Image (tube, rainbow, N blue to C red; front, top):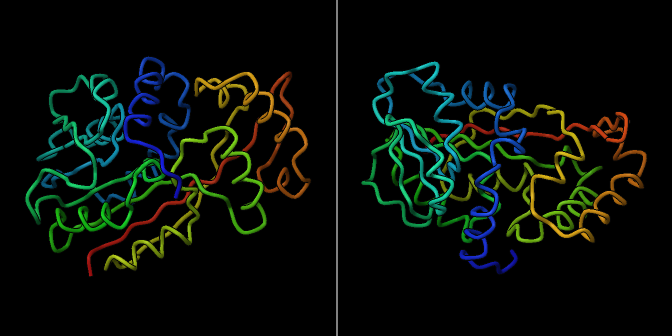
Length: 253
């Protein structure tokens, strides 16, 4: 784990917040949202919390399908991200995930979508999520990961170059081990491919020209097996490829 301060993470998302939904194509990707919703197994009597909610897009999507959910909480450390949530049915909670300010056995479902890699102590986060879940409660994780060991090493190299403030470079096996170590039972696992544009992917973060050039170089000179696994395609002056999204549904033991 890399030692990156919480303030650096907050500043990173403060800068991203104005255009987060515009350039975060995955944020609004229907295949990702539909899979997240499917894994949550929601009904309207439930209480939900999104841990690392950002602009609250998951909860907004949930409410489009289940408008009368009993309780929806968006928890995030960055005020500017939470300020983008304008649905009064969503309770905004400015807090970190290591000490969640809700009582034990409170929520039916917790979701962490593409947020765990910024959190400091993942065991502590899992313990807190487990504490706030009801005895039959479920945790749903949606995370961009490598597909397998064949693309793992090069994937990590690209991600480290593009986003050096990530604290963790998580694999599907890492997530499963983390959950098991914290008394969760894995009940469902799935992976899907999600299309991404290199140029939009690079615009998503405010990174230096040197970083942009280095990532482009890594993409264009990627090993053939990496290009094949990620379905590289030339599209005018762009490269499109497919990221792997890993989904896990786990319940308390």
